[in-house]
Length: 305
Image 1 (tube, one colour):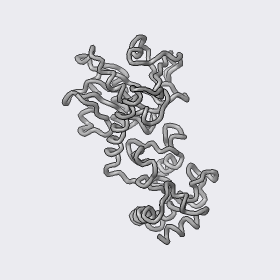
Image 2: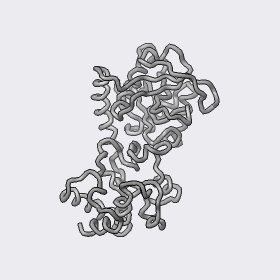
Image 3: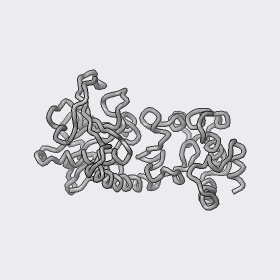
Image 4: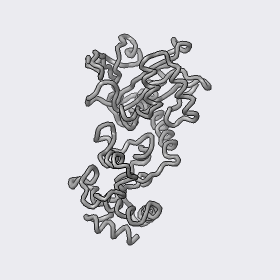
């Protein structure tokens, strides 16, 4: 047996059909969300679906996401849709997918992880403690459990080691064949947080800026999607835009917009060539460190390179 992740798995259609064989109503709802590509829209861009598999058979699964069925809430992240197929029950296999989700959350620096459930006496076996009662999105009472992830000790060390490896595998897979041009004009391929994020066009976008917004979708992405354009560099309002990353109080506004203007003028291929050259010439983490204090100066520097 091994754990794989739905969004990065081979034979995704096969595993979707396996989830569809679930005899649990919530499992069928998950199947519907995945089939219609709506899970991330509902619970967040970084949603994952860990699956314990036995050959071509699905043993158990769950979700790990910024949100679940308690919305709105400041609590995050959440494990949801925990299910083990009848023929595999009694072996604590659910604990394996829970541990996978907890390990990813540990690497992402989360202090606690949460579960919304009607069960009593189940998740306590896996180190969860009852926190409080809340209403779910359907108006029903739900028991909220949480597990501490930040306490130092061998369990945290193990989760961190495993989580770092599993997350690196996810990042590697989601980046394959993906355009690494950020909607706003940055290069996800050159981001100093790139080892932790698949890029804002990938199936695992953990952009530190995007996480500040509902379900991990920043205003620039939301605006581009609504307008049906590839990125801000295709927008007629780019020069005067103050949305999202272009907010005047953002320290990276000018550098970001200068790069978007460069893409608009010269295209993505030249943009990535310039970025490669910038990293040869300068030692920096964020492009705002070298692109000056104005959009015009930033664009001039890019053109000079």
